[in-house]
Length: 170
Image (cartoon, rainbow, N blue to C red; front, side):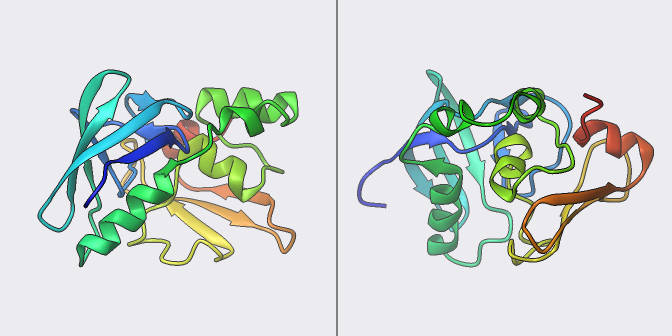
């Protein structure tokens, strides 16, 4: 890594004891989208360290096979433009769900990512797929998000406890 990666968090990201992980297990504390980020150091294949909101965090790309995999993941969650600009144009119900870190039927893929982050590449290797899987701290089964042909969220399914951690009741 020749220069620091700088930008903004693309999405609400799960935080586990000071680490942000590509496995993106839902539940627990979250760093909100739009926060300024700077990655200063890349260690080995899949560890990075950087600053978010004046605090140091670790970043881990759990399925990385190369440093390039980790850099690509970092560049997907750290975007050059503040996502709060686009967020302001979304309908009120979508903004409320995203602010709560939840999803609602009818959201676009971009809105889902902003709200709950990218699914783990281990479970959803292709984000163009019609179904995304997210694990939660609540149950030992994933929540599945199914998108329609138009790219909007059609259905959320999974165990009740896990659903409550991702699906909005708005």
